[in-house]
Image (tube, rainbow, N blue to C red; front, side, top):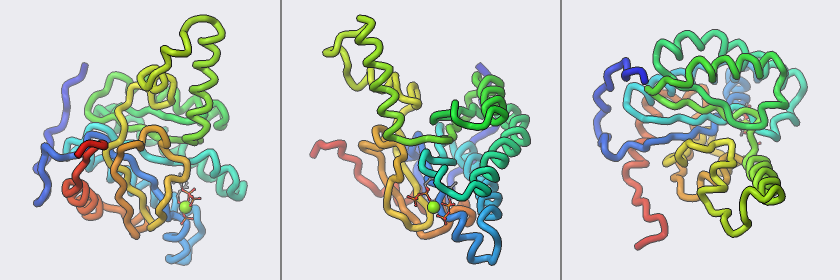
Length: 249
Ligand code: IPE
Ligand code: IPE
Ligand code: MG
């Protein structure tokens, strides 16, 4: 296992290291509105959104947050105009290719979750390569949800388990939370402690339905391309004020 290559930075004022979330998830929303406000086509918002995600990944790494999961494309986003979908797929592929070397150098482990088989073949190849080349990296675990849907994830887990039952590999009463979680796309990744959604929408939009059972929500009006370290600091401060009870008193 590689040693952690970068020193952790001091945390900005008001944050306590022992109360940092271990895993942060983000619904990167508002790219289109950001572009519209600037008088630009929607796709320019997506391009700027990539910069915001790169900054957030670096920030999580600098501050010692162990895992970041970002919602890049939902199973419902295929309903968008074909040009926008095509642009996004090309963008994902280009960014992956451009950023892979730096992720390797920075000791980032990248993973993808979702129905990856339905993505363009060339993007699937880039995804496989990036996951293989970073699999032993340990500075931060970076998960990108692409063609991801929480309901689809749960359904495919049910199908996989049902098949094992049919083959006699598992008994129905052996199916518990641990068994179920091992069949989700996110198997082996701890649940998010904090989910941030930008652009003010107050919904999950089919993201991490199972995993967010006890995650904390933080919603900001800021549009995704404008989400920066100052905003992230604010979100973490809010999170550190929360009392997580998990059903107890
Ligand atoms: C989120 O921004 C990015 C993706 C869903 C890929 P949107 O494109 O949803 O931006 P708005 O919500 O239209 O402003
Ligand atoms: C959620 O945003 C999906 C991603 C950020 C990838 P949407 O913009 O697609 O969500 P809705 O349609 O407003 O619920
Ligand atoms: Mg949106």
